[in-house]
Length: 554
DNA sequence: AGTCAAACTTAGGATCTCTGAG
DNA sequence: CTCAGAGATCCTAAGTTTGACT
Image (cartoon, rainbow, N blue to C red; front, top):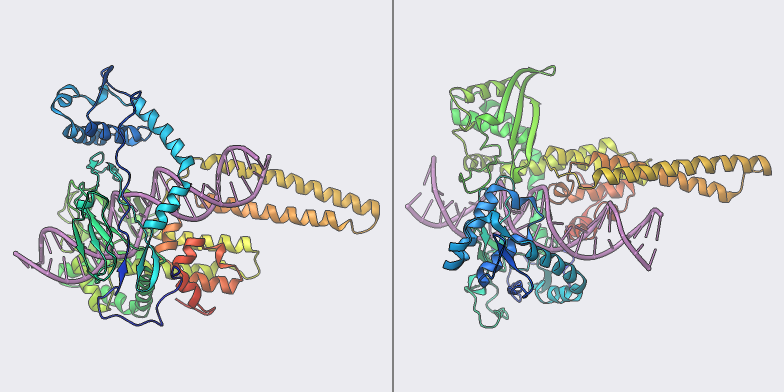
């Protein structure tokens, strides 16, 4: 059986909630067991060689591996690590090793680096073998690629932002921790020798193949299918269909929340303002989080007093709200937005008698908000607004920015700019690439060189014309033309890269933009789809590439 | 109405691989 | 042919949503 490339429209539909009828797989891949340090590699404490027990040694290696990373200098990280490391130590070790600052992991670190180097050169074939054995499953008569078929290896937890649990030990997962999900009638995966599974389950109302509970946050981890699988692609299609449905009723919903802004009920007013933000700014819903368990980040419903500042007047606009908070992944959201008076007044009201640390929307949570939304339209939740806003913005920007008579390079710049507008709306940021300035300078140097070459070619062409009193050899002409083309391409590339310095386009492209908009645009502009989607993106969006007509409108 | 677990999507950075300029 | 760096892929953390239970 070949991996599926397309979906099931023409296939039978299952009863409600049933995700598959037959599921067979080989179970997850387990990372290799720990290999003790070679005899010539030592750990030193307070300048003295110390032979560690196996358990303590393994944890020491986790720390040594990360020594290049600035994580290992952070106080919280070091404290957590040291605490958990000591738990793995023997009595003797514990009474000796009392100060992380006196620990020298230098040799272990060096060994690890050289090991990585040799591993790089070796494992290509091995990787393919592993992929072949564990990377696929059989789901309803089709071979499907599994997304993450590897059990996560042990190591030190790296949270994002100021995570209170950074540095904690993430323990090794054994088969005894893993639940397998597959068909009763299937060839049930065989656990590694000498081991057994925690449980074998046959639940066809869920999509995961295996799961285990992770020890740092206590959350469940799943082995699931790749994005190009039927299960995922269909869900994706549904997501965009729901967002398109919102398009037809968003006007009514807006009318409704504008009315609610004047409600006598405080919770309705708060709901209305939150909805206004979610709609206008594409903020995330903002669930409550347990304090001390994760980094302090917020979304719309969990905004606190200190996250907004109200300005009656700012930069020539009236009623401006200034947002400054850390969102998902501790990415900063900073924005100054003029808002309507009614919302502004409500915000002032919500802030009355509150201190920094207090919730802005104290009578609202995501549950209430989503319940309300789903009563307005089936399937409507807060995140649908993000999808809707993103896709609508792309469509509108593409219309505004692209011109059929442009060159392909210019069209692609326009496409990226439209994509960028969405990424900015959704606040998808990235750290500027390490070598950004350097690579920008390199590109500029190339452009300059090419410019020089071009002017030289031009003079030559003139010269040739004069001498031969003809139109100049077609060869020189062609050369000049090519030169111009390349120059344009590079200049466009430079612009694109500069504008993209701190913006990540991938997330919106992959998760928020209805691929049919892009496919239709490609058809209209006579741009090949593979200019905007790479191989795996084309696989993921195969359904859209296959079904979309030129006249598709989101 | 609130709490919690489960299941799933979304996210940025790390790492690997490929490519095209020199 | 080599190798930097761009682009693709991997990794797994961090969100959202739902539904059971209290």
